[in-house]
Image (cartoon, rainbow, N blue to C red; front, side, top):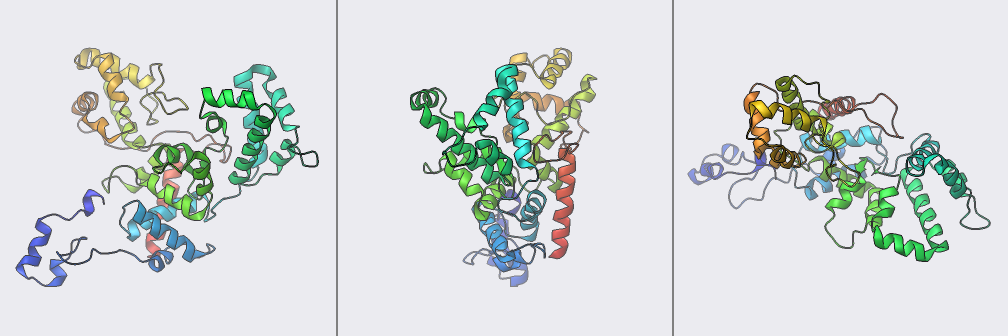
Length: 384
Protein backbone atom coordinates (compact mmCIF):
# COMPACT_ATOMS: atom_id res chain seq x y z
CA UNK A 1 0.00 0.00 0.00
CA UNK A 2 1.53 3.35 -0.95
CA UNK A 3 1.85 6.19 1.60
CA UNK A 4 -0.91 8.13 -0.17
CA UNK A 5 -3.34 5.26 0.46
CA UNK A 6 -2.38 4.35 4.02
CA UNK A 7 -5.13 5.06 6.63
CA UNK A 8 -4.19 7.38 9.49
CA UNK A 9 -5.38 7.49 13.10
CA UNK A 10 -7.28 10.68 12.38
CA UNK A 11 -9.21 8.93 9.62
CA UNK A 12 -10.99 6.75 12.21
CA UNK A 13 -12.17 9.72 14.30
CA UNK A 14 -15.45 10.37 12.36
CA UNK A 15 -16.45 6.75 12.96
CA UNK A 16 -16.11 7.21 16.71
CA UNK A 17 -18.15 10.39 16.54
CA UNK A 18 -20.98 8.64 14.69
CA UNK A 19 -21.05 10.95 11.66
CA UNK A 20 -22.84 9.80 8.50
CA UNK A 21 -21.18 6.95 6.63
CA UNK A 22 -20.60 9.11 3.58
CA UNK A 23 -18.20 11.26 5.56
CA UNK A 24 -17.03 8.73 8.08
CA UNK A 25 -15.64 6.15 5.68
CA UNK A 26 -14.14 8.31 2.95
CA UNK A 27 -10.63 6.98 3.61
CA UNK A 28 -9.58 3.97 1.52
CA UNK A 29 -9.18 1.78 4.58
CA UNK A 30 -12.75 2.28 5.74
CA UNK A 31 -13.93 2.46 9.34
CA UNK A 32 -12.86 0.13 12.08
CA UNK A 33 -14.55 -3.23 11.73
CA UNK A 34 -15.36 -2.72 8.04
CA UNK A 35 -13.72 -4.58 5.18
CA UNK A 36 -11.31 -2.39 3.17
CA UNK A 37 -12.48 -1.21 -0.23
CA UNK A 38 -11.54 -4.03 -2.65
CA UNK A 39 -11.29 -1.57 -5.53
CA UNK A 40 -12.26 -2.40 -9.09
CA UNK A 41 -13.44 -5.91 -9.86
CA UNK A 42 -11.90 -7.96 -12.70
CA UNK A 43 -14.96 -7.08 -14.81
CA UNK A 44 -14.51 -3.37 -14.13
CA UNK A 45 -10.84 -3.53 -15.10
CA UNK A 46 -11.84 -5.47 -18.22
CA UNK A 47 -13.99 -2.49 -19.21
CA UNK A 48 -10.79 -0.40 -19.29
CA UNK A 49 -9.05 -2.79 -21.69
CA UNK A 50 -8.96 -1.46 -25.24
CA UNK A 51 -12.01 -2.67 -27.16
CA UNK A 52 -10.06 -4.26 -30.01
CA UNK A 53 -7.96 -6.46 -27.70
CA UNK A 54 -8.51 -10.21 -27.93
CA UNK A 55 -9.71 -12.03 -24.78
CA UNK A 56 -10.37 -8.85 -22.81
CA UNK A 57 -11.68 -10.65 -19.67
CA UNK A 58 -8.42 -12.60 -19.36
CA UNK A 59 -6.38 -9.39 -19.54
CA UNK A 60 -8.65 -7.72 -17.00
CA UNK A 61 -8.27 -10.66 -14.63
CA UNK A 62 -4.49 -10.69 -15.06
CA UNK A 63 -4.20 -6.98 -14.25
CA UNK A 64 -6.55 -7.37 -11.27
CA UNK A 65 -4.41 -10.19 -9.86
CA UNK A 66 -1.13 -8.40 -10.57
CA UNK A 67 -2.17 -5.19 -8.80
CA UNK A 68 -3.11 -7.23 -5.74
CA UNK A 69 0.21 -9.10 -5.80
CA UNK A 70 2.08 -5.79 -6.12
CA UNK A 71 0.09 -4.29 -3.20
CA UNK A 72 -1.25 -1.50 -5.41
CA UNK A 73 -4.76 0.00 -5.32
CA UNK A 74 -7.12 -1.58 -7.80
CA UNK A 75 -8.36 1.73 -9.18
CA UNK A 76 -8.48 3.18 -12.67
CA UNK A 77 -5.33 5.25 -12.08
CA UNK A 78 -3.15 2.20 -11.42
CA UNK A 79 -4.94 -0.28 -13.67
CA UNK A 80 -4.63 2.07 -16.63
CA UNK A 81 -0.92 2.53 -15.99
CA UNK A 82 -0.44 -1.22 -16.36
CA UNK A 83 -2.72 -1.42 -19.39
CA UNK A 84 -0.93 1.49 -21.07
CA UNK A 85 2.42 -0.31 -20.83
CA UNK A 86 0.87 -3.52 -22.17
CA UNK A 87 -0.61 -1.62 -25.13
CA UNK A 88 2.67 0.09 -25.93
CA UNK A 89 4.93 -2.91 -25.50
CA UNK A 90 2.90 -5.73 -27.03
CA UNK A 91 -0.58 -4.65 -28.10
CA UNK A 92 -2.08 -7.30 -25.79
CA UNK A 93 0.08 -10.22 -26.89
CA UNK A 94 1.52 -12.51 -24.21
CA UNK A 95 4.45 -13.44 -26.47
CA UNK A 96 4.46 -10.76 -29.18
CA UNK A 97 5.86 -11.39 -32.63
CA UNK A 98 8.76 -9.12 -33.57
CA UNK A 99 9.18 -8.37 -37.30
CA UNK A 100 12.65 -9.27 -38.51
CA UNK A 101 13.62 -10.79 -35.16
CA UNK A 102 15.67 -13.62 -36.68
CA UNK A 103 17.82 -11.41 -38.88
CA UNK A 104 18.23 -8.84 -36.10
CA UNK A 105 19.33 -11.56 -33.69
CA UNK A 106 21.84 -12.84 -36.26
CA UNK A 107 23.36 -9.37 -36.62
CA UNK A 108 23.58 -9.06 -32.84
CA UNK A 109 25.33 -12.44 -32.60
CA UNK A 110 27.87 -11.42 -35.23
CA UNK A 111 28.53 -8.09 -33.52
CA UNK A 112 28.90 -9.72 -30.11
CA UNK A 113 31.25 -12.38 -31.52
CA UNK A 114 33.35 -9.73 -33.23
CA UNK A 115 33.68 -7.80 -29.96
CA UNK A 116 34.63 -10.92 -27.99
CA UNK A 117 36.65 -12.89 -30.55
CA UNK A 118 37.88 -10.32 -33.05
CA UNK A 119 37.55 -10.63 -36.82
CA UNK A 120 37.19 -14.41 -36.61
CA UNK A 121 34.06 -14.12 -34.46
CA UNK A 122 31.42 -14.04 -37.25
CA UNK A 123 33.03 -17.08 -38.91
CA UNK A 124 32.72 -19.02 -35.66
CA UNK A 125 29.07 -17.97 -35.35
CA UNK A 126 28.46 -19.16 -38.91
CA UNK A 127 29.99 -22.54 -38.10
CA UNK A 128 27.85 -22.89 -34.98
CA UNK A 129 24.67 -21.96 -36.85
CA UNK A 130 25.46 -24.43 -39.62
CA UNK A 131 25.10 -27.26 -37.08
CA UNK A 132 22.03 -29.50 -36.73
CA UNK A 133 20.75 -30.81 -33.41
CA UNK A 134 19.56 -33.94 -35.21
CA UNK A 135 20.57 -35.34 -38.62
CA UNK A 136 17.09 -34.84 -40.03
CA UNK A 137 16.48 -31.46 -38.45
CA UNK A 138 17.07 -27.95 -39.76
CA UNK A 139 20.29 -26.15 -38.97
CA UNK A 140 20.35 -23.71 -36.08
CA UNK A 141 20.83 -20.96 -38.66
CA UNK A 142 17.67 -21.94 -40.54
CA UNK A 143 15.74 -22.11 -37.29
CA UNK A 144 17.09 -18.70 -36.27
CA UNK A 145 15.95 -17.16 -39.55
CA UNK A 146 12.44 -18.49 -38.92
CA UNK A 147 11.91 -17.27 -35.33
CA UNK A 148 9.03 -14.83 -34.83
CA UNK A 149 8.75 -14.35 -31.07
CA UNK A 150 11.10 -13.95 -28.13
CA UNK A 151 10.03 -17.30 -26.74
CA UNK A 152 11.00 -19.03 -29.98
CA UNK A 153 14.38 -17.29 -29.93
CA UNK A 154 14.87 -18.15 -26.25
CA UNK A 155 14.04 -21.84 -26.81
CA UNK A 156 16.36 -21.99 -29.84
CA UNK A 157 19.16 -20.54 -27.75
CA UNK A 158 18.54 -23.13 -25.03
CA UNK A 159 18.63 -25.92 -27.65
CA UNK A 160 21.95 -24.63 -28.97
CA UNK A 161 23.48 -24.49 -25.50
CA UNK A 162 22.21 -27.99 -24.64
CA UNK A 163 23.45 -29.40 -27.96
CA UNK A 164 27.00 -28.14 -27.62
CA UNK A 165 27.07 -28.98 -23.91
CA UNK A 166 26.24 -32.58 -24.88
CA UNK A 167 29.13 -32.67 -27.32
CA UNK A 168 31.61 -31.48 -24.67
CA UNK A 169 30.06 -32.24 -21.26
CA UNK A 170 33.33 -31.95 -19.36
CA UNK A 171 34.06 -28.50 -20.72
CA UNK A 172 30.46 -27.49 -20.15
CA UNK A 173 30.60 -28.51 -16.48
CA UNK A 174 33.86 -26.62 -16.01
CA UNK A 175 32.47 -23.45 -17.59
CA UNK A 176 29.31 -23.64 -15.48
CA UNK A 177 31.42 -24.16 -12.37
CA UNK A 178 33.51 -21.09 -13.08
CA UNK A 179 30.67 -18.96 -14.44
CA UNK A 180 27.34 -20.18 -12.96
CA UNK A 181 25.31 -17.54 -14.80
CA UNK A 182 27.06 -17.86 -18.15
CA UNK A 183 23.94 -18.97 -20.01
CA UNK A 184 21.99 -15.96 -18.77
CA UNK A 185 24.83 -13.58 -19.57
CA UNK A 186 24.91 -14.58 -23.23
CA UNK A 187 21.18 -15.22 -23.75
CA UNK A 188 20.06 -12.68 -26.40
CA UNK A 189 16.56 -12.24 -24.91
CA UNK A 190 16.92 -9.50 -22.28
CA UNK A 191 13.30 -8.28 -22.03
CA UNK A 192 10.25 -10.49 -22.40
CA UNK A 193 6.51 -10.81 -22.17
CA UNK A 194 3.55 -8.55 -22.78
CA UNK A 195 5.14 -5.73 -20.76
CA UNK A 196 8.70 -6.32 -21.97
CA UNK A 197 10.02 -6.44 -18.43
CA UNK A 198 13.74 -6.85 -17.85
CA UNK A 199 14.56 -10.54 -17.43
CA UNK A 200 17.54 -9.66 -15.23
CA UNK A 201 15.33 -7.60 -12.92
CA UNK A 202 12.82 -10.42 -12.60
CA UNK A 203 15.52 -12.96 -11.80
CA UNK A 204 17.05 -10.62 -9.21
CA UNK A 205 13.71 -10.18 -7.43
CA UNK A 206 12.43 -13.75 -7.48
CA UNK A 207 11.66 -15.02 -4.00
CA UNK A 208 10.95 -18.76 -4.14
CA UNK A 209 13.92 -21.13 -4.58
CA UNK A 210 11.97 -23.06 -7.25
CA UNK A 211 11.92 -19.97 -9.46
CA UNK A 212 14.95 -20.90 -11.52
CA UNK A 213 16.13 -18.56 -14.31
CA UNK A 214 14.55 -20.87 -16.90
CA UNK A 215 11.26 -21.16 -15.01
CA UNK A 216 11.07 -17.38 -14.67
CA UNK A 217 11.67 -16.93 -18.39
CA UNK A 218 8.91 -19.43 -19.15
CA UNK A 219 6.55 -17.58 -16.81
CA UNK A 220 7.19 -14.27 -18.57
CA UNK A 221 5.90 -15.70 -21.84
CA UNK A 222 2.47 -16.31 -20.28
CA UNK A 223 -0.17 -13.60 -19.97
CA UNK A 224 -0.37 -13.91 -16.18
CA UNK A 225 3.38 -14.06 -15.60
CA UNK A 226 4.22 -11.21 -17.94
CA UNK A 227 1.61 -8.92 -16.38
CA UNK A 228 2.53 -9.95 -12.83
CA UNK A 229 6.24 -9.20 -13.20
CA UNK A 230 5.69 -6.14 -15.36
CA UNK A 231 3.35 -4.67 -12.74
CA UNK A 232 5.81 -5.39 -9.94
CA UNK A 233 8.54 -3.66 -11.90
CA UNK A 234 6.34 -0.67 -12.82
CA UNK A 235 5.54 0.03 -9.17
CA UNK A 236 8.86 -1.09 -7.72
CA UNK A 237 9.77 2.36 -6.44
CA UNK A 238 8.13 5.38 -4.91
CA UNK A 239 4.47 6.13 -4.49
CA UNK A 240 1.93 8.38 -6.13
CA UNK A 241 4.27 11.36 -5.73
CA UNK A 242 5.98 10.16 -8.91
CA UNK A 243 4.26 11.64 -11.96
CA UNK A 244 2.92 9.03 -14.35
CA UNK A 245 5.15 10.14 -17.22
CA UNK A 246 8.23 9.81 -15.02
CA UNK A 247 7.17 6.38 -13.79
CA UNK A 248 6.86 5.28 -17.41
CA UNK A 249 10.30 6.71 -18.16
CA UNK A 250 11.75 4.86 -15.18
CA UNK A 251 10.13 1.63 -16.37
CA UNK A 252 12.06 2.04 -19.60
CA UNK A 253 15.34 3.55 -18.42
CA UNK A 254 15.75 2.13 -14.91
CA UNK A 255 14.63 2.84 -11.37
CA UNK A 256 14.91 6.53 -10.42
CA UNK A 257 16.24 7.49 -13.86
CA UNK A 258 14.00 10.59 -13.99
CA UNK A 259 15.12 11.75 -10.55
CA UNK A 260 18.77 11.13 -11.44
CA UNK A 261 18.46 12.96 -14.78
CA UNK A 262 17.15 16.01 -12.91
CA UNK A 263 20.10 15.72 -10.53
CA UNK A 264 22.46 15.70 -13.52
CA UNK A 265 20.71 18.75 -14.94
CA UNK A 266 21.15 20.63 -11.65
CA UNK A 267 24.81 19.60 -11.47
CA UNK A 268 25.39 20.75 -15.05
CA UNK A 269 24.04 24.17 -14.15
CA UNK A 270 26.27 24.39 -11.07
CA UNK A 271 29.45 23.10 -12.67
CA UNK A 272 29.09 24.68 -16.10
CA UNK A 273 29.83 21.30 -17.69
CA UNK A 274 27.79 19.65 -20.41
CA UNK A 275 26.49 16.35 -19.07
CA UNK A 276 24.51 13.52 -20.63
CA UNK A 277 21.16 13.70 -18.83
CA UNK A 278 20.58 9.96 -19.11
CA UNK A 279 19.79 9.11 -15.50
CA UNK A 280 22.92 7.00 -15.00
CA UNK A 281 25.22 8.72 -12.54
CA UNK A 282 27.82 5.95 -12.76
CA UNK A 283 28.74 3.53 -15.50
CA UNK A 284 27.23 0.08 -14.97
CA UNK A 285 28.36 -3.37 -16.06
CA UNK A 286 26.19 -6.05 -17.65
CA UNK A 287 26.10 -7.73 -14.22
CA UNK A 288 24.41 -4.69 -12.69
CA UNK A 289 27.44 -3.52 -10.70
CA UNK A 290 29.09 -0.07 -10.83
CA UNK A 291 31.93 0.17 -13.36
CA UNK A 292 35.36 0.99 -11.96
CA UNK A 293 35.89 3.84 -14.40
CA UNK A 294 34.98 7.41 -13.42
CA UNK A 295 31.79 8.55 -15.10
CA UNK A 296 31.20 11.97 -16.60
CA UNK A 297 28.81 12.86 -13.77
CA UNK A 298 31.22 11.63 -11.09
CA UNK A 299 34.05 13.68 -12.59
CA UNK A 300 31.89 16.82 -12.72
CA UNK A 301 30.90 16.31 -9.09
CA UNK A 302 34.52 16.00 -8.02
CA UNK A 303 35.47 19.20 -9.85
CA UNK A 304 32.52 21.17 -8.49
CA UNK A 305 32.88 19.87 -4.94
CA UNK A 306 36.57 20.74 -4.76
CA UNK A 307 35.62 24.41 -4.27
CA UNK A 308 31.87 24.44 -3.54
CA UNK A 309 31.58 21.49 -1.15
CA UNK A 310 35.06 20.39 0.01
CA UNK A 311 33.58 17.93 2.53
CA UNK A 312 32.55 15.80 -0.45
CA UNK A 313 35.70 13.81 -1.03
CA UNK A 314 36.05 11.63 -4.13
CA UNK A 315 35.52 8.58 -1.92
CA UNK A 316 32.37 10.09 -0.39
CA UNK A 317 31.01 10.99 -3.82
CA UNK A 318 31.68 7.52 -5.17
CA UNK A 319 29.99 5.86 -2.20
CA UNK A 320 26.95 8.12 -2.52
CA UNK A 321 26.57 7.59 -6.27
CA UNK A 322 26.55 3.83 -5.76
CA UNK A 323 23.11 4.38 -4.15
CA UNK A 324 21.69 5.99 -7.31
CA UNK A 325 19.35 3.07 -8.05
CA UNK A 326 17.74 3.28 -4.60
CA UNK A 327 15.50 5.64 -2.66
CA UNK A 328 18.38 6.18 -0.22
CA UNK A 329 20.30 8.35 -2.68
CA UNK A 330 18.26 11.36 -1.53
CA UNK A 331 19.65 10.82 1.99
CA UNK A 332 23.28 11.13 0.90
CA UNK A 333 25.58 14.10 1.46
CA UNK A 334 26.15 14.41 -2.30
CA UNK A 335 22.44 14.74 -3.08
CA UNK A 336 21.92 17.19 -0.20
CA UNK A 337 24.82 19.44 -1.28
CA UNK A 338 23.74 19.65 -4.92
CA UNK A 339 20.07 20.22 -4.11
CA UNK A 340 20.97 22.90 -1.54
CA UNK A 341 23.07 24.71 -4.14
CA UNK A 342 20.26 24.49 -6.73
CA UNK A 343 17.06 24.82 -4.66
CA UNK A 344 14.80 25.73 -7.59
CA UNK A 345 15.84 22.88 -9.86
CA UNK A 346 13.15 20.31 -10.74
CA UNK A 347 13.19 17.00 -8.88
CA UNK A 348 12.50 14.92 -11.99
CA UNK A 349 12.84 15.20 -15.75
CA UNK A 350 12.60 12.83 -18.70
CA UNK A 351 16.02 11.24 -19.31
CA UNK A 352 17.77 11.91 -22.61
CA UNK A 353 18.42 8.30 -23.49
CA UNK A 354 18.47 6.74 -26.95
CA UNK A 355 16.90 3.29 -27.11
CA UNK A 356 19.05 0.66 -28.78
CA UNK A 357 17.26 -2.61 -29.43
CA UNK A 358 16.93 -5.15 -32.20
CA UNK A 359 13.17 -4.97 -31.53
CA UNK A 360 12.79 -1.19 -31.99
CA UNK A 361 13.17 1.34 -34.79
CA UNK A 362 16.17 3.64 -34.72
CA UNK A 363 15.71 7.11 -33.27
CA UNK A 364 13.49 6.11 -30.35
CA UNK A 365 14.22 7.58 -26.93
CA UNK A 366 13.05 7.11 -23.36
CA UNK A 367 11.22 10.44 -23.59
CA UNK A 368 9.39 9.20 -26.70
CA UNK A 369 8.43 6.00 -24.89
CA UNK A 370 7.23 7.78 -21.74
CA UNK A 371 5.08 10.26 -23.66
CA UNK A 372 3.52 7.53 -25.82
CA UNK A 373 2.60 5.48 -22.75
CA UNK A 374 1.31 8.56 -20.94
CA UNK A 375 -1.04 9.26 -23.87
CA UNK A 376 -2.30 5.66 -23.74
CA UNK A 377 -2.80 5.98 -19.98
CA UNK A 378 -4.95 9.08 -20.44
CA UNK A 379 -6.98 7.36 -23.16
CA UNK A 380 -7.58 4.44 -20.80
CA UNK A 381 -8.75 6.79 -18.04
CA UNK A 382 -11.25 8.33 -20.45
CA UNK A 383 -12.61 4.84 -21.14
CA UNK A 384 -13.37 4.56 -17.44
